[in-house]
Amino acid sequence: MDGNGRWAKARHLPRVAGHRAGVEAVRRIVEAAPDLGIEVLTLYAFSSENWKRPADEVGDLMGLLRHYVRSELAELHRNGIKLLFIGNYKALKPDLVTLLEDARTRTAGNTRMTLVIALNYGGQDEIIRAAQALAREVAPDAIDAAAFEARLDTAGLPPPDVVVRTSGEQRLSNFLLWQAAYAEFVVTERLWPDFDGAALAETCAEFTTRERRFGGR
Image (cartoon, rainbow, N blue to C red; front, side):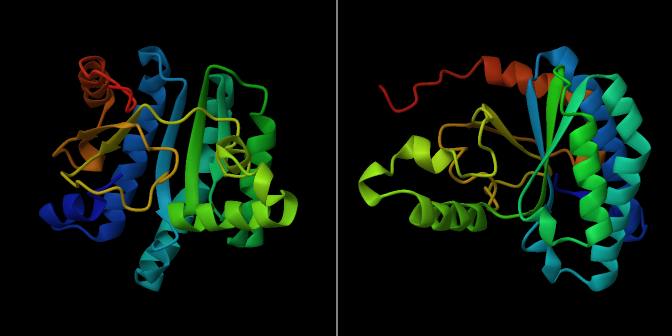
């Protein structure tokens, strides 16, 4: 979800204003996605590298996360949205971890769409943690793709069909490195705060034009 800072800078606003506008974009996208047939939507909200940002910006991001979960949980639940979290999110502050776990538990039975929020997430870190679990639990000769995937944060979820990069970025940025092996990439120049249901519909339409071969031909 790139472009919050650039969106704010273009309007001579502080970066936190861009992040707040980004939260509004999340609200729009989560509302639109189920009607477009999207079954799983994963949002890269905070990477393991984002800790390198200024402390006040990190604090603003964590505050916005708390606000989003508290203010949107009831509506998400009413709309049948199941909440999941991936990444090393349990390393966050205990009160925030409790809030996230409670949200996950409350929405666990919902089936309309699964909303996955990646927090303190890095694809390389995820792969290392999965490899460590394999080393502890599985004999070397028994290690295969299924055993590895079962120990990823996304165990039980389908691989992504599409990875969307806003603000014109054309890199994977340590996101779902294993899972996105055969995902289609859609790059848009829109900054994340300007992304909306129509833009998401355009992305889905673009996806339908792709011929997916999965390396078979």
